[in-house]
Length: 378
Image (cartoon, rainbow, N blue to C red; front, side, top):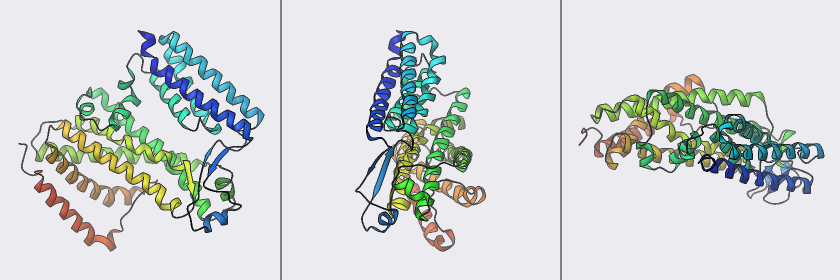
């Protein structure tokens, strides 16, 4: 029974290690970081001045293909395999070996991290091991992945309690931190590319991703703002769902459930995987991920509201739209201007577009009325 409980941890770690080994062998064979690009170029100016799309994806940092670095990677792989087999043989020692697998998976990222997929799998497996004997679907990452499927059954079956409010807050904070790292790295490195600084060559042609302490500061700042936005959104949906619709769902239930709707925002953590020329660099790629993640978030909000308030789909859509309008006004009129939120944002210039904003708000209110938001629960 214990071994079966750890089938996911073992399988995910093994698959992650296989990918990390494949990545390492490619590094050793090529003698340099793996850089996959659209077509060969000779300089940064050629990239930025070409009229067609050019982009690159890199696996591994400078120096990762050197002999001593490959020896370090081999040690990481061996230790991860050892820990995985130890957990499979004796799951009760999960608290010792699970964190080791998670940490070593992150340390493999400078070597390409098994094309990033390997490190992600091993990290999830290591963290899941800490929550033994829960099945994977009930673990931290299991809940995030289940939420992403937009299943009403998931949102209605969450074991809600006062003690789980902290877990929900941690989920939102984790999303904010990871997204902050990704967007912070992307903005920092993109600044060198757009100004054609000396580092642009190493970023675009050498496959480097430069780091600064401000990236970590950005990430921590985004944790605070993401938590604040989660609480504001939960309050808006709670007020409309519980007051206007006459339901008796408590605020904690709404907040705990909506926390998992933030899972799609993790897509933005993958922003620094691709660096390209304009307009992809500043618009197509980062904004594309931003829009996809937000649309996905809206789908999850609709599913969650439909489940926790036991509303019809029409009413749930109205609650989400009207709540989103109130949330948008609070966030863009108060939180963004006051806190100067970091990361990638899509902003609307209010002084020049106030008529458009008022018109859009009026349409949403009217549409919400037609959907039955103001008629009470039927």
